[in-house]
Amino acid sequence: MKAGLLLILLGNAFVGSLYGQNTADETKIKQVIQGFFQAFSDEDIPKLRSYCQADFTLLENGEIWSLDTLEAKLKPNFGKGMRRINTIYFSRIQVKRATAWVAYSNQAAIAMKGRKATIHWLESAVLEKSKGAWKLSMLHSTKLPPKKLEGQP
Picture 1 (spheres, one colour):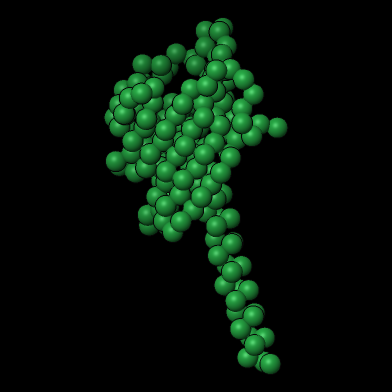
Picture 2 (cartoon, one colour):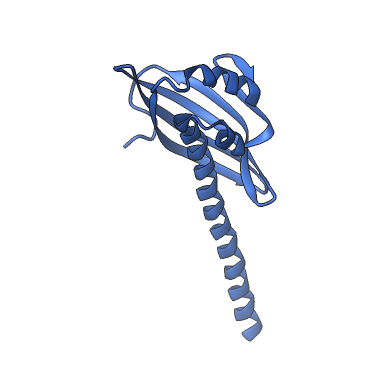
């Protein structure tokens, strides 16, 4: 009887620790994605790069971009007074060992020189955990027509 009870308690502790780890990983993964886009808003390339693997790939508008390509596309807009507020609605996060994939809707409210626009994307990301930290390996972005985002309250 005592052995059976001990086995049940150990099993619950093991399953509980796995669940807790997944919850912690999911929180960290969300923070990486949100931080990546906040770095866009802050015009902070070193911070943006800190959220990515060295071989990061972005699939954007039918093109394949590296971090260098992304930086080259972003820099011409820096210092022009652009404000960008990001809102991200996570649909799904799947974690398997040291790899995660994420599906989310992304909305950016952009203001520059008195003009305002809201842009919507449906995106997926692949992250890898290395040395205890999650980093973006790949991001795929599909621009959507203006509408209510999937998962938006």
